Image 1: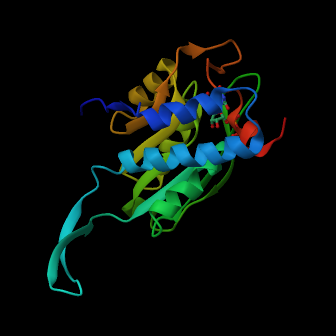
Image 2: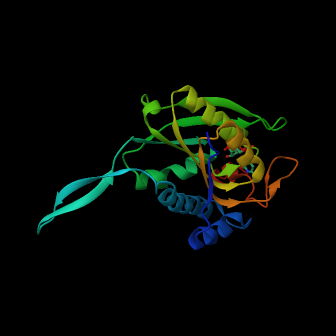
Image 3: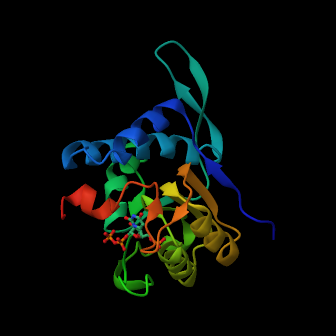
Length: 211
Ligand code: PRP
Ligand code: URA
């Protein structure tokens, strides 16, 4: 199987909004809003290759050939907590998508993901899944979440992160070469606390105001 691709969505609107997220002076309200805006723009690109089928629609004047989404139903799976900040914008664009939740936190010493919650749609294995989390740092959380989804039968998984770095991308590509990764930015790397540099700090704390 070939290696998955990494798509860096460096659209001017996304870059502009990312500058707001990175700024340490951006407050909780604006941070949360802009995470949503970037998520919507990323969703637009990450769904570009979804299959469509032709249907006929009666306009007030005549019959029009249109295209609608076909194929697998969709699911959005945020990695808690920070992934929650990306869900509303995605659901707004894909209202029929179901939402599953995977709770992981990084152990502050080992930086390894610890699972504390999981609730997935019953038919998750039959769906096209979008895993969302603002940060792809060591990749430990993403790899664990994707492994978990595969254990539940998922075969079509797309990963969406706002900021990634080479270490995290490498980890996901090695463990899950079939998963396409969409990022708004590929940063330089990690510090010794496994925070992304230059990054935006702790995404969960900035979305929920916990620090
Ligand atoms: C953050 C982030 C990712 C993870 C990325 O979550 O939202 O889930 O770290 O790091 P990794 O790639 O090294 O695994 P965190 O563990 O801080 O939990 P939170 O979202 O509950 O704040
Ligand atoms: N999690 C975050 O929220 N930020 C980072 O930089 C790394 C992991």
